[in-house]
Image 1 (cartoon, rainbow, N blue to C red):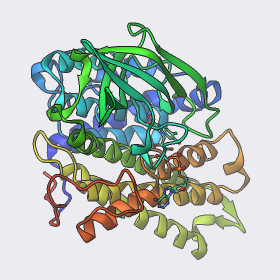
Image 2 (cartoon, helix red, strand yellow):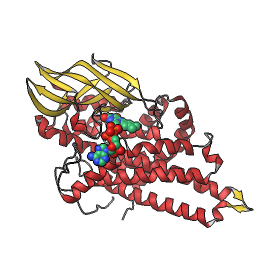
Image 3 (tube, rainbow, N blue to C red):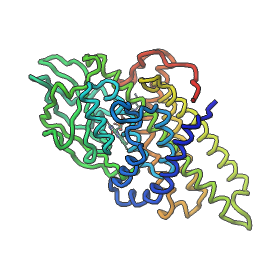
Image 4 (cartoon, rainbow, N blue to C red):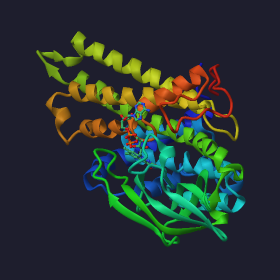
Length: 406
Ligand code: FAD
């Protein structure tokens, strides 16, 4: 069923070759210095891996999310940071602008991304994490636009991203109209301030920072409010975010696969008790479980990516299922891969300890495993559940039938 077409296999092979030749050798240094890998961004740009999902009319390749996920998965096997950049240059914020933006907004986003930008999505606040709709950042209606005030945190790419997609509560006079989004370009927007950087456990080459909004004026032309109606528009913006979740799932999957491949080679070389340690049944069963978990995660990630109709987004329930499965599998698979290396796995000379740290993020960022389970349950039960404030139902009922992967 999941037989990839010849063109998809070629794309996958191209991504694998670039990741092996260029990104694998740089990953440890990126982790050590915590510097944003601009060289890797240039390589992604040269390979055509930025803006793959942007329509051809705007200079992109009009690829679907399965193509993008395949590229992300291969890159993540060698460098989680570079895979995350690839996600954000093809999914999430880019997807939202392409779907709901004006012609000018789409041109702006396409030009920036194709030139190497990775848009930042600014939703989370110190007091509003899982309960995203409890955000207190305001966009006060004024003549010709909006004035934004508030503080976002854990914003991926803060200080390196140019384009920002900022979510805020729209206030018109005394009326709270609901949550809309706003585009701002760092460097051109006075009042968009990059705050302190989080000392993150993993994925250290991409900064996670505060973004402080101090009387940031956004013109009407830079407001991104689907249908012009914030009350309904937020759900639509979050539907675009399902593409980001599939991308995050593909990163987690690739990190898990990279760790598994490393362990598979090691256990066949390393000898103890006068034989390769791969001959011990206890370790064989660990490897078998790792391969089963990864195969299941890959099936869900590919299925979720392929669930997006042309011009639409991945199914909410499938995206959540894929992210939970890929993230949780990556956490234990990377740990088991480290274990199979013995002390060598604990050394920073090998990539295992980095992969353990990098994988840890994906059960948290972009919707925790707990909150996503609530979304899955909501889709199964066909209703919004009270325990999440950012719970939302998909525009259409969750598709039940698996789709063929072309
Ligand atoms: P909380 O919401 O405080 O949750 C704490 C715990 O309670 C979690 O275990 C959670 O699962 C659980 N919990 C909360 N509510 C429920 C419930 N109803 N039922 C069951 N359990 C519940 N945000 C952005 O806007 N932009 C970004 O670019 C971005 N990048 C990130 C990158 C990283 C590396 C990380 C770690 C986070 C990033 N985030 C970003 C923020 C991320 O989306 C939030 O961390 C996430 O939504 C959880 O919010 P929180 O951390 O405040 O946890």
